[in-house]
Image (cartoon, rainbow over the protein chains, first blue to last red):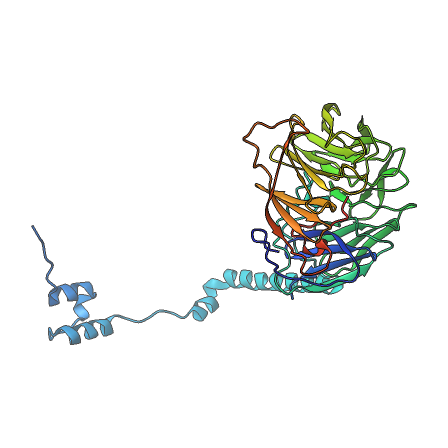
Length: 43
Length: 409
């Protein structure tokens, strides 16, 4: 989401309930309740 | 007085030396052409100079440099084939909510539009409550199965993995070459960042669900035994132990030499990071003593913490408290009564995630210039923006802009 306006920038479905996230550079690392760690990045 | 320069044929001849080879007639165009043609063109070629006998030392040196360069390139290519070189990341996320102050701020920029899943790795247990730490191109994550795993941030390839005897429901903190975690057996454990070798362990008297904060060479972590511990990062020696007045299930925030921790019983404490002496300790809210305080964030002298006043588990009121004195500046109640969490604070904006599927943006310091009344008459804060209208039913965590989700401790 855009920090200022709240407008949605992107939406990516993942398996399980996503929870805590770490963002480093162009990537986000998302943990889920299914015991997975997922790296999300640009194409 | 203006001076003018007259371009005469003699002047042109003088400029195009050698003058003796410039011939008449004195017609401007032909004379210039003739003068240029008269200049000797005897520049030797570069190759000819290089092959000349006098240039032999230069030749040997250049050939040696080319051979050395080719050898280095070949060596790098060979190493690259054996193990991919991780992308050099510009910044790190060494602990829960990005750093010890728990502001949730990261340099980003985060994935751009239309992102994809780059890799997806299964662990030994659920990890939704914990965030990964990312340092030096390696992702460190703890899971409910007791696994501590290090993965290559670029490829997801496992670097190392160990299994603790009990679950590790915390976010690791990485600093000084160590990965620090807590487990349900009450241990705080430091592992070598590169090899997974265990460097030290400090035992507490109950489960550690508090994610460690590391600042200025010390580890700060809470235990459900009701104490906040300060541990020397390098040696694992306990520096001090603070009675928080209730079980600690959430994580401390450290900023400006002060550690802030919430405990069961609605107790919020600020402790001197060096001495372990309380600067202030107070009940948030009505003082009913039933609420649990979530992990606070500290920013610009203000502590932001959510608390469930009536329910021991759900935090639905956000308090802004002066970090120096403990005086409440304002509070804000979730409009739906649903659980809320501080996502991030930056400048004057606090991002609050809610289980009501909305995200709220509040002004953090709107009442900073006004006299702050004491509880229970403290002012309230209204959101300056509210995002995520319930046009869709989905977890708010998927929209978190800064890296925290609804289950973060």
